[in-house]
Image 1 (spheres, rainbow over the protein chains, first blue to last red):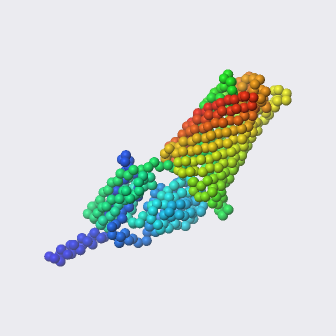
Image 2 (cartoon, each protein chain N blue to C red):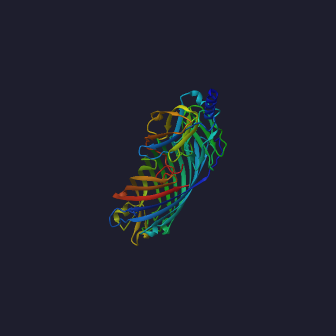
Image 3 (tube, rainbow over the protein chains, first blue to last red):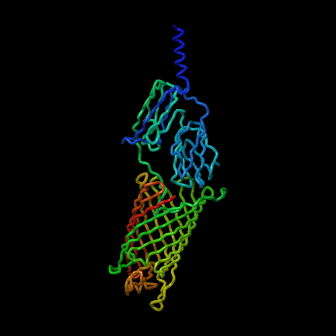
Length: 219
Length: 275
């Protein structure tokens, strides 16, 4: 009997450890008016740091399409190599002054630019020296477990090893720091956990792309 | 210059409607006439980044104006421009300066107003942050029209040619992600053209005189030297990233030789599109 129980327990543990049998975290992010928020980065940091160990981060990319960064917000894992392909027919000059990563890619077109390694956690604000209105964000995450909300304000982090997590959210227009959103949650393989955030956003000011007759005129 | 020049043409479009409460720049109420104007413009430009700090812009546009009442003022113009811009630093908030030159040809329905317009500009500015943008511009403009026959012996008939020095200080302030306000302070010194009926006061101060039938059979254009002050305020809304709706108001006050002064108020709405 004891052998049977031990076998069942062992299979249960093994089943839980198999890929696809991890925990799931479903997230919904809204603002104080109930409006669903896209481009919010949700981060789940396990209490056990060993859980966060992951193999080499996959390569990532932020494209430039119609003189805009696509996507507008890109979460990447610490140490990621990010390419900046240019899908426009003009050249761009991508740069960042952010403490998490200062870099500049001299004028280029196509896929000529070398990848940039993001080796410090934090927010990296992207700009183009030619097209002032272009702005984008790379969030360099210390945890490999993250996701970004879609237009409906929803995001899912799946395949999480069960256990204790600190979960938080970040958005480019968030009024308060991401630490103010911190929650602790215990995740299990039994069923998904759901977390909802109401965050306050500050007004966003963007450099206008079309500036009209009264502005400096041609760039 | 470590990088080869390369760029793509960027096309735009603008339509506008304005109301000018003193089209002829007249001082006295019988001569003051107002009109509404529909305008359209097709600008095109190509930007050539020249290394880290410089860019060269080649630009041109086709434009036209249609007057509701004074149809002789209807016109079409073609313009070509060249500008060199320098930025001190990287990014949107780096200070910049630009020197430029342009030449335009304007053809009027009443062809005696046809003119070549030469313009040299020097501009500088800096975007302080995402909300505030500040820039100034100086321009010398020469408008060269064909001289008309002398109506009075010894007094030039070249009333539609003008030289002027223009300065403007402009401020832009974002109210939100899609809306921004503009304020411009304007100054101008040089030739002005004022169309009135026969008047001894303006005649003795004028440097040129010509008939101006676009305003009626007894209308005369006088060229004077004057100084103009004014302002322009506007609110702009971007319904899409590529377009901009604008609503503005311009007020100008001109003091010309011989005590000839006039004012002008011009409300305007515009729609701009840029590809």
